[in-house]
Image (tube, rainbow, N blue to C red; front, top):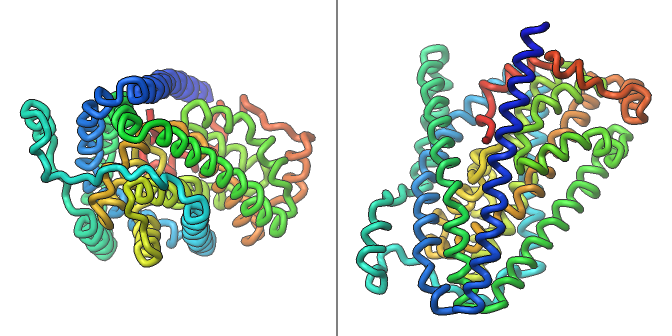
Length: 448
């Protein structure tokens, strides 16, 4: 018990250090966005000349798209197989997560089509072959960054590899483990790249504001406000309504019970930080350990409601800003692509941005220039994404526990009423450790 307590305290200390680093990046991005907007408004020509900074950052993100898609899809197919073998709980969880993720993507498309974010900006299309107007030194530096790999062939290859590894059975386990190690490396590189986000955001925002004026700032705030409102309504109306109908639990009581986790997520912009606490709290709430042990980790990889809403709304924003709005057919095909590719956006800083770039590159590569604007406001929307994802996973655990009759209704009532408060010391001592360890083989590594 003492060793478990020591390990948990060490983990908590590491997490605190991670929070501090995340805050530094967050503050730097905010400062860069403000400075870029000021430069673009006061010195438009200077702002436009800073565009290569944003372009360079976009190229770095593009460089990571193919390895992210490949690793996460291969491992994702393996995770689906593992969850399905658990039986009724795993199958029910996967079916629910697929439906809810698709529904969230569709909501993002509907809201995006109603408010038309980014309309009227008419930014220049991204043309990677156009180098005549770029300074030779800048062209040389941008040329160092490797070119992008086609996304759709990579996705197709990853699906084939994933199913082939399933058919190999135990013989494929070492290969799957190697892909897992490769995924850790890929996400570590992505995290390193994200520390350049302030530079990319500064250049992109300065260039956009310099070219379009105050309209760019208005458009970005419109997108952020619409996204936050959409996430709030999704939690209260969709998730809250479903929770009330199926279990009789009030969504606001559940959110109050998870208040500390919300604070932790808001501080780190990642729901991964609260994963062990969610496992412990769901078990304390009266849901059986097998249900929690399967549903929570599977949800962290496959139930990304907030990310789904973000991906579709941001895609429409970029398309409108570039003056090439997507027709209905393109939107539907984009939705299908995002259903698959969004599984690579689980819990790692910058993965959502990479997935967005992948979707745009697969459908209309000329839209990639607009991703620079999203870089500037992505961090502002990350909290809403993480909170929505986390709430969706908590609700899913209650729903599935109810459907398979593995929940103590009396315990739920006592806990949410405050009669049986959650014991922080019990959790620190290792409550729920076994399911958390089981998670490690199925989910994306935690962020810093």
